Amino acid sequence: MHTYRRVNYQDRCQILAFLQAKVSVPEIAQTLGFNKSTIYREILRNGSRINYKPKEAEVRYRHRFRRCKRPHLIQDDKEGIVLYLLFSDLSPEQISGRLKHEKNFRISHQSIYNYIYRQYRSLTPYLRRYNRRGASRVRMKAHKSTNKLAIDSRPQIANNRARIGDWERDSMYGAKGNQLLVCADRKSRFIKIGRITERKVKAVNLLTKSILSSTKKPIHTITNDNGPEFRYSHGLVAPVYYCHPRKPQQRGTVENAIGLIRQYIKRKTDLSALSDEDLQAVENCLNFRPKKCLDYKTPYEVFYGTNVALAT
Image 1: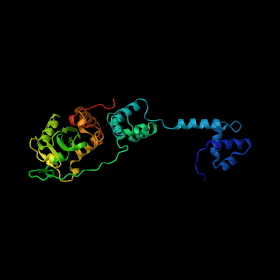
Image 2 (image 1 turned 90 degrees about the vertical axis):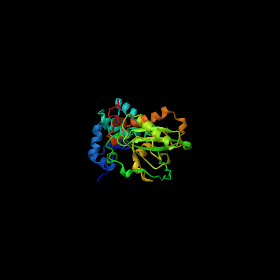
Image 3 (image 1 turned 45 degrees about the vertical axis):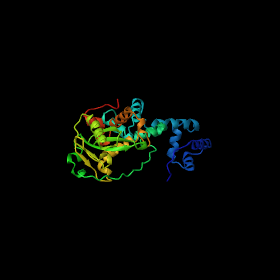
Image 4 (image 1 turned 60 degrees about the vertical axis):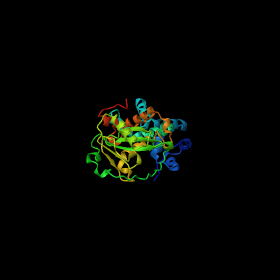
């Protein structure tokens, strides 16, 4: 039983030599290790026993091979749309899901990965997981105080992400101990970012109230950790629920939001060098990025109940 392989240029040169020596086709096939039908087909496709030329046969073979391959799915206008969404920091999976959501055209995320690796190796840095390493966590000492609402008493409607207005908040460090306040809505994953100028509890609460009130939406609950900047909830218009110490999974929405922000603001970034417009730009990038958990809608669309065309 012969192992399948393609006829190459060296084989074609040997076929020509055998034909000139008037060797029969079955003998040629047995000598070269092919089935006799393969040699018959090779001769008939590329001339005849009298007019067989290896170079012309090789050219014809390569032409047929290119023509029989499936055409690339990402071409012309489709290529422009995919590149635009990729440059907008969407992952291939998000691009695929968003195009399907907008009923633009259907293409799998694997086809987009293949396009990136095949055509433009320079595009690989636009993949969010490209050359990425995990960051270590800094353990903070939990602050003990009384009269706190434990997360166990948070309403079930907030636990189920059933409404807009259940927020999680946490602080995010930059260089020199400077911090940002990050708030994330549990249902829509909508993000708000504020600059912490004073680490006093009162100042942080006022900042929280200010950035959440700017959304013009009701504020039902707030969930945070036991950090010293969240020691008291005075001045807030919604009940504040505290997670158990060293349980970041209980505020997973804001933890995930901080991980996404790290794509733009690294741990060693000087926050004082960032303007309010820079922080707003980061907000917009994340709030207009479709999410799989939202059926490839954007947080902005879910939060405000509207539709935005990203792929047009």
